[in-house]
Amino acid sequence: MLLRLRKIPGIRLVIATAIIFFLLTLMLTLNRHYTFYSSYDQGIFNQVFWNGIHGRFFESSLSSQLSTNVVHNGEVPEVSYHRLGQHFTPALLLWLPLYALFPSPATLTVLQVTLVTAAGLVLYILAREHLEPFAAAMITVSFYCANAVIGPTLSNFHDICQTPLLVFGLLLAMEKRWWWLFWLLAVLILAVREDSGVGLFGVGFYMVVSQRYPRAGLAVCTLSFSYMILLTNLIMPLFSQDISQRFMMERFGQYAQGEEASTLEIIWGMISNPWRLLVELFTPFFGTIKYLLGQWLPLAFVPAVAPASWMIAGFPLLKLFLGKGMSVLAINIRYAMTVVPGLFYGVILWWSGKSDFRFWIANFKSGVLRQPTEGNGLGESSLHPQPKHLSRPFRRFWTICLCLSLLFTFTSNPNRTFYFLIPDSFSPWVHVSLSEQWPRVGSIRSLLAQIPPNASVAASTYLIPHLSGRREIIRFPALQLRNDQQQVVNVDYIVTDLWQLQQYQVAFDEDRGNLQAMTAVIDEITSSGNYGITGFQEGVIVMQKGAVSNPEAEAAWLAFRKEIEPILQKQN
Image (cartoon, rainbow, N blue to C red; front, side, top):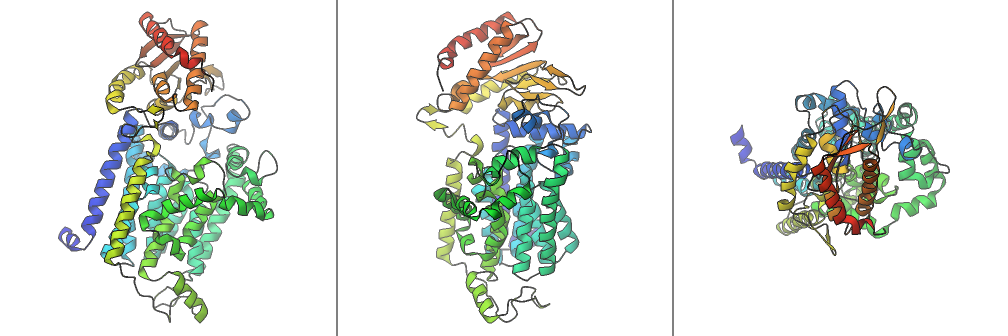
């Protein structure tokens, strides 16, 4: 079997690329995590999984800190807050047994890399349904070189990392007519997130318009749209009001009239104001074009002329382009990954000759785009498309595009993964090398070891993931939370990395503001005697409620505070 596989042109290229992708992304993401550069979302998901294996499904005090009750109403975070009011993600339960065996935030990192790597292998099998081995291999290599794949893979764990594998599996099941698997994967896709139905709707739209499987496609569209509407308007509000009061307003508030809006109200706001819809769709113009070029680059820009790519990926793109905020056009974060499956499947069909604009126009003129016959299932009964030839010059061009995609991905330093190689700022100069950061790791770990596993903690952003396997944890400088006894209490321990803020504040006002705010709180709670300083090393401070300060730790803190005094006096 292995000998036969080795003889298939391109298969060794696919396997070698998959192995390289897996090893490099795993090494980089684990280095990012263990050198304290994984951040808040990694902590949220780790706490959700940790609570899950203890029978408290989808509860998270870290998610509660981002809820509308805390952000807008000034309430304290709750340990019993159900995250399903923010994001409905029951598909995460699939991986709970794995986490139970290896309960660590690093487990989620390994899981993410594995899921994305597996998605590329399924893509190759899907491509082989239509293409000769080398063309299928090139498309698969493009997947592993895509900025929209690498960037989100190098980030904190996120639920969308499941999407490429599930959607490629769904499309493969459609090609094979394994309808039991198709509908199972459709349900799992909907379970990934409350908005996963947008991408699934695109698949159904393609099935209808291409007339390959119009009845099944209509069922997919109906299922996905109905599910999203019912979920966001009836089910998620049972857990919290975040979907209408925070997330809809933050992303689509420009279409709303008041301070909150349901998905139905947002949709009506779009329909009733088509001019604003059109403006939002194309603004910022150059940012939108740049985003599309970044998505198309690893596929040599073929998605731009592939009808199926527009049909399937068009709906996730529409969701991004109609939203507001910096993240919608950021190709290195998780949302970009929702666009990937549709683009790649459309390119597969384009290279096979079964979906390009000239063929479709000819079909419509001839009136032969009709219900598929048993012979080909593609609605192409009289016009017979021919696979496109992958010429040697185009191979060279495609290779150049892949190299550029990798170069742009690397230089963009996605999620600070390459912080040790690429400065975060050149003017002023901000760079933390491995030789600086790794020696700090041992000191930080020794300080974190002082905190009992069941104690409540307030921690700075980059320390949260390493402490998030507990019931009670929030982000410092907040100090209070509501426990299981419904009592508002101050946390038992505080730990924060001030050195990192000191390094980055030179170029980033937000880090300077955080350093100033945290220092002010530390001054207040230590001078009042509410907390004592029990440890201080490498710019990381540990404080315990009601404790007497350790003289050496306190002296080290005061020396550090004197060092950063000029920063504390600066105005943002």
